[in-house]
Image 1 (cartoon, rainbow, N blue to C red):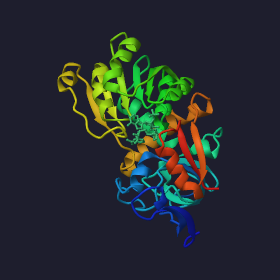
Image 2: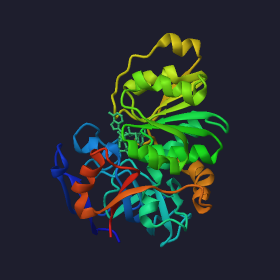
Image 3: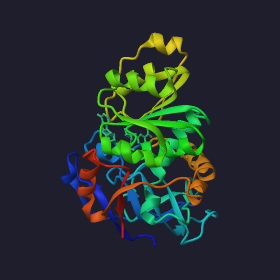
Image 4: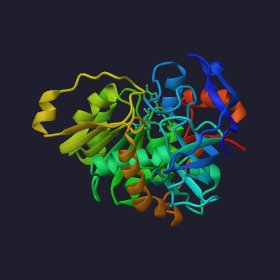
Length: 334
Ligand SMILES: NC(=O)c1ccc[n+]([C@@H]2O[C@H](COP(=O)([O-])OP(=O)(O)OC[C@H]3O[C@@H](n4cnc5c(N)ncnc54)[C@H](OP(=O)(O)O)[C@@H]3O)[C@@H](O)[C@H]2O)c1
């Protein structure tokens, strides 16, 4: 298969959706421990929008001008030492770039098998949302059964994954959104309570009192940043954990350090995109063991907001940056 081309989304220069073109690019060739995947569907992320704008370059070792961080597809070829997969098997995974294309190569241990129940579009809506939520909220922030977690922007891809995972492990999830309809729809994905919040510093204290009897949340999965991080410090319980996942609402915050100290809070940040291969493999394998079986049992559902063919990648970017989405924007290769 070497020496062939593929169709791929290319960022021609920094700018709006109009800088994206779909054109031929060199098809990648798998190394000894890698597999070549024929991508059936991918999905969009905020990082793709930032990369297109020239604000978030691809990490070293990944295609500089082909975006796309997640995929679901069929194994098309196995490297000379790769033994885990055979051609035709359905796999999904995360990459540092290059998934908005017909093919990619990836280490054979960095993918997981797609649950039978999931269509290609559903499978493509899973990796970034569910691996990020699982890794951040459960592996790192150590949310446990019986604890309370606050999820701002709960109608986001990661937010809806987190709400379902929290419910699946017996924790209690609370969500906020600036959009009333998203709160109503998120109730179907496991939130116990939700509220429209547009100014978290002013509005969250009241909801925290009502929902937690004043004792606060054990974990805040902060998908927004800025004022949400400030409000989270106030909303957390004694020994609460704040995990910073997104900065869509601002990359700076002045935190009340006295509260951080007196409540003995833990604050940590996380990213998936720039992780080295070994850490990526650990996160994917843990996810494959602990989370994917829950899709087979119907305890978790992929949430697809909308689907676009590869040729309509510009419209897909516009849809994600509208902030109107509920769940994931999927890109179909065929
Ligand atoms: N660290 C990582 O590895 C990692 C991985 C994946 C995603 N992320 C981050 O996690 C967050 C969620 O990602 P996603 O892909 O699931 O997001 P998404 O589906 O694109 O949803 C984001 C939602 O955030 C809300 N929002 C946007 N701007 C806001 C603002 N200024 N204030 C309050 N709410 C705002 C909007 O919903 P409303 O209707 O509620 O306004 C929007 O629909 C993003 O910040 C993303 O960058 C991080």
